[in-house]
Image 1 (tube, helix red, strand yellow):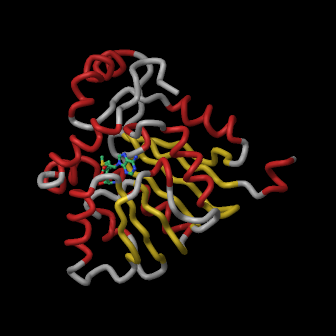
Image 2: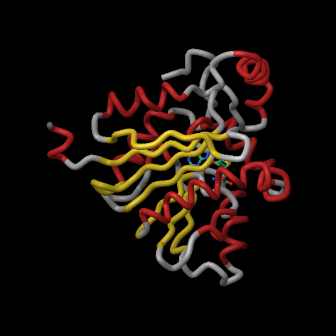
Image 3: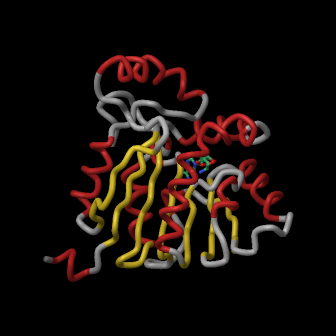
Length: 223
Ligand SMILES: C[S@@+](CC[C@H](N)C(=O)[O-])C[C@H]1O[C@@H](n2cnc3c(N)ncnc32)[C@H](O)[C@@H]1O
C-alpha cells in the first residue's frame, strides 16, 4: 500500500543508499537519531527478555541494552551489518546474541520468538511497511511489544510543506520525511492483533515520535 503523499521506497533505493551510508553512518546519523534511539531502547528494556532489532544498522543501539536482555539484530544491508559485526567483535556487548542480513518483509524466525521487536528509524523507509509490521507482530509473543521510533509527517503547516518538498530528494538518501502516523494506526486496526498503547513525541524537540503496540493473545483478539 502506498502512502497518500508519495510512493514507498523501493528495495533497491534502500540497499543503494545504505551501502553508501555504511562508512559514514555513525558519524553523521548517529548523533541526529540519538535521542530517538535511546527512547526506543529504554522502552524495550522495560519489556526485557528477547529483543529483535529490525534494521539494526551499524549497531549503535548496542550500548543501550544490558545483560537483562538478549538482542538479535537483522538488517537488509550487508555493509551496515558488517559495521555492526565489527562493533560486536570488540567483546563489549555480550547481550547481543546474533546479527543477520535479513529482509524484514520475510523474517525467518518462528512465530512468537521475541518479547519485543524494536525498529528505530526503519518502518517509514521499507518497501511495504504494512507487511513488515505483520512480520513484527508474527514474531512477537502475546503480551510483547512492537516499538517504533521515527520522524513522522507533520500533516499541516510549514513543517508539512517542507517535508513534502524534501520527499523526492530524500528518497535517494534512503530517508523519508512524509510518512503519516495514521498509516501505523490503520495497520493496527486492520491487523486486529496489536493494540496501540503509546504515541509520544521524543524530547527535547519532539522531532521524533515513539509508537508502541502490544501484541494481543488469541483470546483478546477474538473478543
Ligand atoms: C536509518 S537506518 C537506522 C539504523 C538503526 N536502527 C539506527 O537507529 O541507527 C535504517 C536501517 O534500516 C535498514 N532497512 C531498510 N529496509 C530494511 C528491510 N526491508 N529489512 C531490514 N532492514 C532494513 C537499512 O538497511 C538501515 O540499516
